[in-house]
Length: 63
Image (cartoon, rainbow, N blue to C red):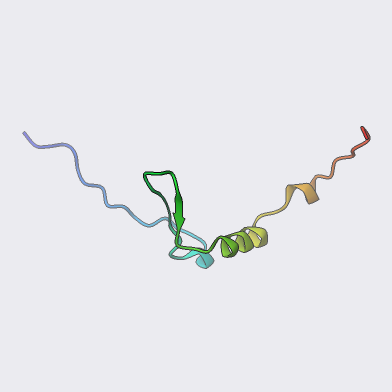
């Protein structure tokens, strides 16, 4: 009888060109390792992601 489990090739996900080669891994101790500097990643996110606080200002009248 044939084994129904087939090996699935892992394809690299489509990513933004600025993040080409970016990988994150979590080791057995729970530490996150990355191929991209944290400051470079934060700079990319600041550039690409909108800031909700600036888009939806709330009136704080409870002070």
